[in-house]
Amino acid sequence: MGVLSKSPKDMDSCIDACVKCARACEECFTACLEEQDLKARDKCVKVLNDCAEICLQSVQYMARNSNFSKAICGLCAQICDICAKECEAFKDDHCQECAKICRQCAEECRKMAQ
Image (cartoon, rainbow, N blue to C red; front, side, top):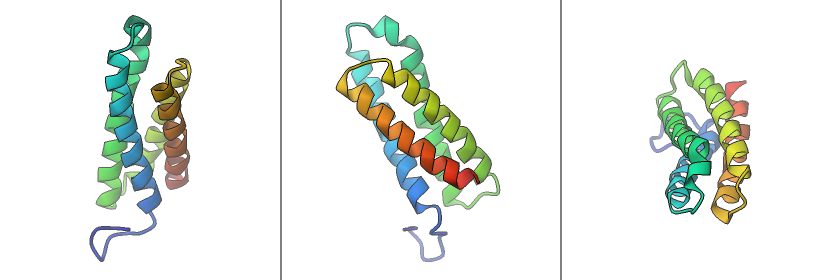
């Protein structure tokens, strides 16, 4: 539900998914920094940052009902899919959970982008 009474309501599910995904990516990034195989996670930690950033940008665009919301959500879906794939390569719980959340966000963003 939008914060203000005149906020568009059709974006709420995507906004919620993007906020959750950004948080998951930030938490996963922090957890990855503590893993023994950090060097092997180089690409993963970089894409975690990209994913968190694009998710938060998507929230901002949707919150202001920007004409570019669909385009940025489309890009967000692509980055979330890439992030999920990177996280899935690591078997620890935080990466597996993050991948699942990224996939859910990508699905919501694809709906928005249509």
